[in-house]
Image 1: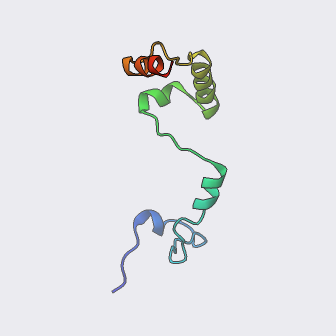
Image 2: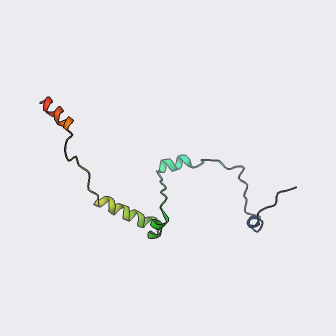
Image 3: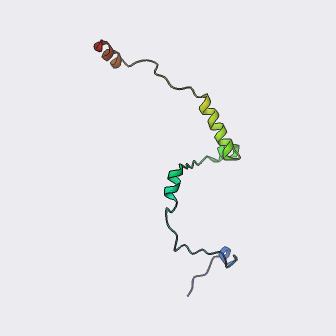
Length: 87
């Protein structure tokens, strides 16, 4: 006995082919690595605040622009000791 097709597939046209026997896993993997694509999944409340990726990029750039670079505020006691010994 042949397995019955699900309703949503039975209602679709015959042109739609759902034969995945020739599918290749990771076919575009190397290309994506070379292009340097990143996918970041946002929480729903954050995603509601941004309509498109351009607005997300704009907000992140402004955060990076306003971020002060971290500087060394003081040497550790061990480093001070080494500096004194070195002369």
